[in-house]
Every structure is written in structure tokens, then in C-alpha cells.
Amino acid sequence: AQGLMQGKRGLIMGLANDKSIAWGIARVCHEQGAELAFTYQGEMMGKRVQPLAAELGSEIVLPCDVTDDASIDATFATLQEKWGRLDFLVHAIAFSDKNELRGRYVDTTFANFQLTMNVSIYSFTAVAQRAEKMMDQGGSMLTLTYYGAEKVMPHYNVMGVAKAGLEASVKYMAMDLGPKNIRVNALSAGPIKTLAASGIGDFRYILKWNELNSPLRRNVDQIEVGKSALYLLSDLSSGVTGETHHVDAGYHVIGMKAEDAPDI
Ligand code: NAD
Image (cartoon, rainbow, N blue to C red; front, side):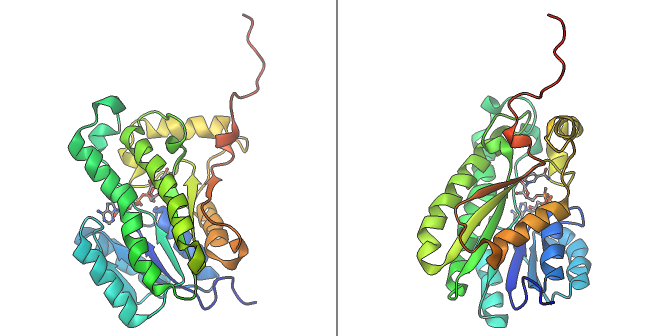
């Protein structure tokens, strides 16, 4: 059988290691026949990313720091030269100083606020500008967000503010790029133990809370996020854009868990 991603070429940004959400997405897309290129943040990351990319038969593995315009331009210049066309883009990148992912949001410094917004929101817009030029036959762009954009979650702080901005930017880009048949969506993943998540205070407790209180009574994994990404990146979702789709075992629908009330 032909895979759902047969003949499609995609760039995956944000692979750090085999725990990354980007890795779950890459594996599922590869299984369905996609041809993949990867970017990684720096030399340290490169050593871990190169062998992973090789596992999926990728020949294009490039360093790209999204705070550096020249680095983004170089990535897309190489892609243009090697592929000429791009069908999909996965943006799985966020950053904030972990000292501000505990304590109070209100104490956020301007320097970290700026850096968080730059890496976690603007970088998706910056890469979309370049990717648009390579998507002359339409395409699909996807970013990763979290429920902390919608509701106050413990320790998510300035990252919650960034994810709210990211989700809004998805809607504006969907409108801008829709006439070119380029779709722009977000996946709102439940908590998953990754390198980035390890910076969030009490993360183990957040995982446990989601496991106990979500409708499915468990957490999700990277492959489940990958399977939802497959839907949004493939033609299965040809009528869907500007959407934030939750892959969180249903946690976001819960107001209060039903259980036997204590005597009060
Ligand atoms: P991860 O640490 O594996 O991935 C984060 C990536 O961001 C890394 O590859 C890192 O190199 C990259 N990055 C950070 N700053 C960068 C920069 N300046 N230039 C280029 N790359 C940079 O962790 P992850 O959990 O897989 O995170 C991927 C995405 O998923 C993030 O947007 C994160 O907010 C989101 N997300 C994660 C969870 C979770 O619980 N893990 C839940 C919902 C959403």
C-alpha cells in the first residue's frame, strides 16, 4: 500500500534526541513514505541528531538557530538547492529560562520575556516566510503548543503567554497563506517527558495529575502526537486550517473530575 506521505518532502525543526516530540512526528511521517530534512540547534545537538536522521534515511541535516536570521536563510537556501519544493514544515521549538518556569509569572524579566517570545512564537513566523516561497503547490505547516496557553497551569508562566501568542499567530498565518493552499495548524500536546519539559518545575506531578484526571486516565506519548501530526500534515486534513488540535487524552475538556463526594 502507498503511504499517506508518499512523494511528500518535509522539514522537521526541533529534534534534540529520541525523546523529542519531533522524533515521534518524524517516525510516523517516515513510516508513511515522507522524505525528511532536519535542523538542529547547535553542535552539541548535532551529534545526537545526525544518527537519528540517518535512521530515517535523511540526507539533509542542518544546524539552524532560529534566533539568527542568517542561519534560517542558510537552511532554506540549502533546501531550495537540494529539493526546490517543500510540502510540509514541522516547528517543534520553544525556549525559556528555566529559572522563570517556577515561581510567579508576574516576576518575569524583560530579557527572558523577549527571548521566550522570539524563540517560541516569532521563529514559527520567520520560518513560515521562507517555507511559503517553497510551497508553490500548497503545503501544510504545523507547530506545537500546550494547554497552558488557554488556562493557567502551574509553573508554565511566561511560556503560557508565548503559547497563547503562538496559537493566535497560527490563525493569522492560516488566513494569510490560505489562498495559496498552505494550511497552518497547531497540535496541543499533553505533558510528555522530554528535554524541554525537564525545565518545568514539578513536571512529574503535572504528569501524574494528567494521568489521574484526563478522560482516558493516562498520558499521551510522542508517537500519538506523531499520528495526529500525520493527519494535519497529510491530505487527510485538506479542509482544516487555523486549528489547534488537542492530543492530551482529553484533559482539556475537564472542568471537574466526577468522583464520590466526601461528606461535607
Ligand atoms: P525538546 O527539548 O525535545 O525540543 C525542543 C527543541 O527546541 C530542541 O530541539 C531545541 O534544540 C529547540 N530549540 C530551542 N531553542 C532553539 C533555537 N534558538 N533555535 C533552534 N532550535 C531551538 O522538547 P519537546 O517537548 O519535544 O518540545 C517540542 C515542542 O513541543 C515545543 O514547542 C514544546 O513547547 C512543545 N510541547 C511540549 C510538551 C511536553 O510536555 N513535552 C507539551 C506540549 C507542547
